Structure formats: C-alpha cells, structure tokens
Image 1 (cartoon, helix red, strand yellow):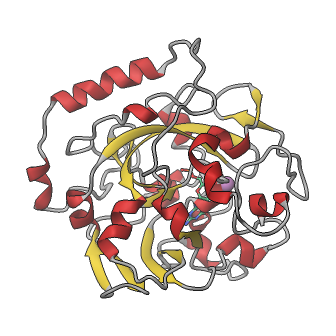
Image 2 (cartoon, rainbow, N blue to C red):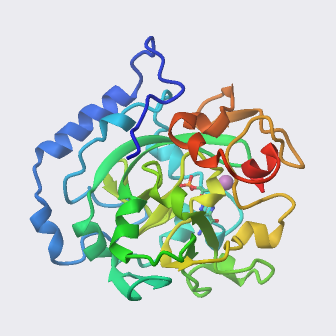
Length: 325
Ligand SMILES: Nc1nc2c(c(=O)[nH]1)N[C@H]1C(S)=C(S)[C@@H](COP(=O)(O)O)O[C@H]1N2
Ligand SMILES: [Mo]
C-alpha cells in the first residue's frame, strides 16, 4: 500500500495561514450534515448557476483529508483563481470564465472503454454519488511558471480505475475532453488537435495523489475549473490535469496528448515538475504565485516527491527525459 508521507514543505514551524479561515468554513459545511443518501436522485452536480453567482454549495459531505489539509502556502482566493484559467476550448486567454458558463454540465456521462472487462458509460451523478468524496488542499504549477493552491472536492482516480475493472494488458489511461465547437468557440480554431487529450500510466493512476475533481471552494465545480469532472495531478505541470472529461480509455500504447501532438519539443508525456529542466523557451526555476506579487522557487515534483518519486526510479532514459518528455 501507498502510505502518504509528510510533503517536502511541511516543516514543523509552518505557521497558520488563511487556510485556517477556509477550514473553519468547511467544518460549517460539514455541520450541515447533508447525507450521501441525498445524492442518488436528481442531477445535483451540474454547475448550473448564473455566471455572476457562481456554482451552488456542494450538496453532500466532503470531509477534509488530513494528509492534504495544508499545501504549505495560502489557498488562492476563489475570485482570483476562478478568473484566471487555462481552458483553450473557450479561448487562449486567461479570462475564459464568462465564455465557460455556456457549457451545460448537468446530465453528463463518461464513457469507459478500451482494455476493460466490459466497456460502459457512467453518469457523472452516479459516479459522484458512489465515490469516496473528500476535500484536499493542493498546489498547482502551470508549465507557464505561475502557480496556485486550490481546495478541491473529489475522489482518488484509483476509485474510477477499480470500478472500470481494467484488463492486465492495460498500461495507460487516455482521457478525452468534450468536443462541441458550437458551445466552446475555441474549438473553432482548427489548428489545435481537438479534442483535448491527456494520459497517465496505470501506476500514476493508482497513486493516491491522482485526483478526480468535482468541486472547489466548498461548491459544485465551477465550469471554468473543468466541470463536471476534471483530473488533477499536483506533481505534474498543469496541462496534464485535463478538464471536462467525457471519455476514459484503458490502452496499451502511450497516448499522445493534445500539447504533445501540437508541439512535442516543448510539452512531453511525463511533464513532472522539475525546476532544473528548463522549458525550451523559459526557465522553470521559479514561479509567480497567483494573487500575490511573489516569485518563489519551484520545487522538484512540485513538492510532492515523497509521494511520487518512487514511481519513476526504473524508467528508461535520461534523468531529464522522465521529467518533461
Ligand atoms: N480540456 C482542457 N483541460 C485543461 C486545459 C485546457 O486548455 N483544456 N488547460 C490545462 C492547463 S495548461 C492548466 S495550467 C490547467 C488550469 O487549470 P485551472 O484553470 O483550474 O487553474 O488546466 C489544464 N487542463
Ligand atoms: Mo498550464
């Protein structure tokens, strides 16, 4: 079994941060005591709210995972995080939050296919209602050298893998985002290889850090964060964390991701955060902390080495290779 060890930044002197305020609010939410039994019925998880209101409060319980209570940095304020996003389906600029509200995120199904016992489609409501929902506060490091800290609600990717019952021949998971150029106008930009695709190894999918996100900031997931379900891999560059997933395929061949297909010299499959391996056009040594004037040193594996480095010990190739290609 994988035991969660102390993250690299969790020094004993780490002081109280604005998370304390956040955690306090969370326990209020928990105190509302909305049971999981409520979750079986109508579609509660679509972020159906007016853009100016934001999504509804999370309708169930989401106990804070104590292993992820502290990201070693303050949680990025919601208003900043939810108005600075990468979601190229809605445009290549950061302010896509308004355009993303056009996406209807209720009543979705996710196709599970490829090397599994029986290919199927799971409704996102059903998936969420039966998953071990929790909250965790984690770091996110974009390859563009900015970072944020998000309080996600979701469940380990491993729960989906177990449910899918993959065959022994499966070596990778391939994820796909929706494709609907009528709603997502960025998808009319024909030079991008839509739909957005990402992939991980089976070992990465089994790692407790690999998380499927269905809520944020105590709410149903904001469209701009990738509602109704997005992946989050905190030790990898942000582009691996694919949004608004419609299909998960278990495959034998290593998937070619959206960015790899577009520019393989710059965006590889592994994309593990390493301050010493520069992007061909800029340094990865430091990062701008979203919502502050700070630039801080980037940490190897984005600070999650104790949890993930062991997965990469026997990979072939140069040390640099396993980080970004
Ligand atoms: N489908 C899809 N997923 C995506 C992207 C995208 O453009 N489309 N951008 C990626 C990148 S580059 C980053 S940094 C993160 C941004 O997540 P955030 O907007 O929640 O911060 O989403 C990733 N997932
Ligand atoms: Mo990114």
